[in-house]
Amino acid sequence: MSSPQTQPRTYEVRTYGCQMNVHDSERLTGLLEDAGYVATPAGEQADVVVFNTCAVRENADNRLYGNLGHLAPVKAGRPGMQIAVGGCLAQKDRSEITRRAPWVDVVFGTHNIGSLPTLLERARVQEEAQVEILESLEVFPSTLPTKRESAYAAWVSVSVGCNNTCTFCIVPSLRGKEKDRRPGEILAEIETLVADGVSEVTLLGQNVNAYGVEFGDRLAFGKLLRACGQVEGLERVRFTSPHPAEFTDDVIAAMAETPNVMHQLHMPLQSGSDKVLRAMRRSYRQSKYLGILERVRAAMPDAAISTDIIVGFPGETEEDFAETLRVVEEARFAQAYTFQYSKRPGTPAAVLEDQVPKAVVQERYERLVALVEDIAWAENKKWVGRTVELMVAEGEGRKDAATRRLSGRARDNRLVHFMAPEEQVRPGDVVEVEVTYAAPHHLVSDAPVRSVRRTRSGDAWGAREGLAAPGVLLGLPTVGVPAPLSAVNGCG
Image (cartoon, rainbow, N blue to C red):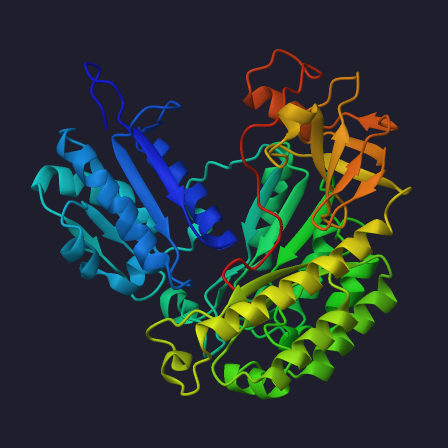
């Protein structure tokens, strides 16, 4: 990409949307570095800016075009700078992007992220925009070079695409039908990650528990979880996001009986009203959903369950919304990601009658958020006085530098801010702390750390940071790791 007389070109990848996009951005970063680009130093303008977009929320378009507009004068004053737009919004808008923002050099879709370096070079040589959108996947993304954000935790895709037809969701038309990886490929990737120091993996799929549909094994996901339990050195396994309609008891058994599979479940509800679920084309009902939660808690009493809920879906009445509140009360979610319904062109719900007025949606949303927070706070208060095991995290505590605390994730994924011990610890190390305070979205330990276990993951973090030996100073966290498990895009 560069000659001995020139400096390597720098890049920046900006990511929006769900965990699948975050993982795709790790691949885009790996592809660019494999092609000779280098990450932009902090505070400097990149030679290449890549937007990995999301199309799920209503303001996605405005956000992208606003950011592109801000970059237009920057690019005009910086000869050779390039801008690329990929991801779901690129798959949806295609040449519309270069029409509205003609200073964009490359537009690529969800099925051809591996083409980015070639498209950038072609745009540079031909001096014209390159738009390449494939309708189906040609190379499974996990075969591409990847630069992971974290030294100790990693995303692992088990499938891409989705076979569901939820009326509010545009993802299936942008990501395509579900395509599954073979179990041996997944386990080989996990074993390689563990050899590199990773101790926690999150299995990813738009509908992760439907894994196996492509090769005809309805029990494949539970088998995969059990196989993860045989990987030596793998301490924690999570997954996101399952679909209630296909959540089977063999998966519950695999979670309960496999020691390194965490007792933490993100189970999208979307609505508590059977009428609304039917209109959403969600193939389960309230009773089935609550039955799953009951069986999960019977097998794993300590399970922490989170969810997604959409407020104001077309036709939702006050009675329908009351049903959602009732399910939330009964479900006792540790966390809920709440969304106001967002009309997305191209989805069946966008043309439904009885769109709920914005003011009504806002008022219901505020009531739901208040209830969700009250319940989460009450559930978190039960942890005060208990000892929890944390994997020390990086970048999870925005106030850590000011409070002189560190942060970590408990085995059930609760975020805990804890008092920094005298003994130096690193991201990826494991500590035990006593919870002394609870808030709706996190726990706090201001008691002395009870134990510290240094890990291979901590060593890997130290090596990445260029530290001479294990056990060197943690330094307060500054950069990101896989986000808390949630279906940010409302899928699942």
